Amino acid sequence: MGPALAALLMGAIGSVPCLWITAALSLCASLTTMTLPRSVGAVDSNADPANQDALSASQVSAAETHDRSTTAFDAGSLAKAAWTSAMEGARVLFKGDPVLRAATLMTFGIVMVMGSYQGLVLPVFFTQANSPELLGYTLSVMSVGLLVGSLVYAALTQKLSRRTWYVLSLSGMAIGVIIMGSLPSYPIMLAGAFTLGFAAGPASALLGFFMFDRIPENRRGSALGTQNSLLLIAAPVALFATSALVSGIGLEVASWALVTAWLVITACALLARSMRNLNDKQADPHSIDAREGEGYARHQE
Image (cartoon, rainbow, N blue to C red; front, side):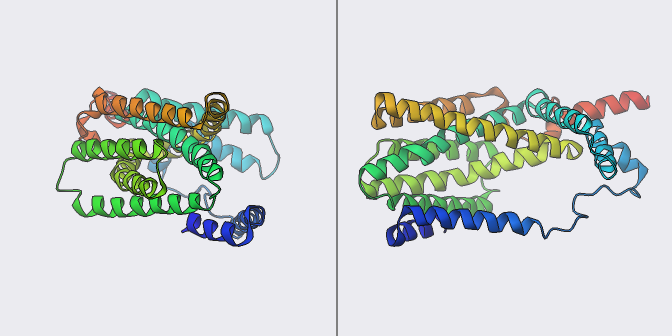
């Protein structure tokens, strides 16, 4: 919806007014957050002590820092708590569950490659063709494909195993990326965009499920926060590298370089040992919950 509306506005009023409209909408979104109640996210001091014991050290530290901030601003403690939370989040993502680690690395690869393609290669391609508004329609078709693919996966998820969905989704995404990466005529580009979006539906759902299911609840905030922070760093770095490629070797060669990178990511994701048996986390003896459960049992003994 958004990209299509942007394409219409670019064709009607030009690109610069569209940027001002985007900035105004972002400002409205920021102001809307000011309407959230202050109680959102606050720690309940009357909570069950048993539940309080389940909190991680970083969460307790963050809660204490929040309480102290009402009387004094301790920048040192706040920075220390943030660093501790980030390190704990990184440990959960990369040193705990091997399936979670593989899913995290694959997410980074997808964001870096697709962010570079959507944020640089396609805009340059359509600008050189004197049709910048076609970018919005292409991204809208991709979004429609993603929606349809997600709905199909939700309806038929029990028909196939997770591994089968995983392989089909990654294979379909590779086909879509190859089609779009060849920078074909516009109708074929739309077909590739829909194929990529449609195939990405199951993979998107599976990656989200792995993140939610395999991260312990009391560490989910720090883990997801760390992941989002790293993604905010990785995406601009990849975009800068792509811009250097486009400037140095040309648009078409840079596009095929991204296709190659995508195929490498796909091959690694399909061949990863941890992703060959995508059972529930209870069946994984290396998961964080499993190890903590064993430690708790030994402690009780």
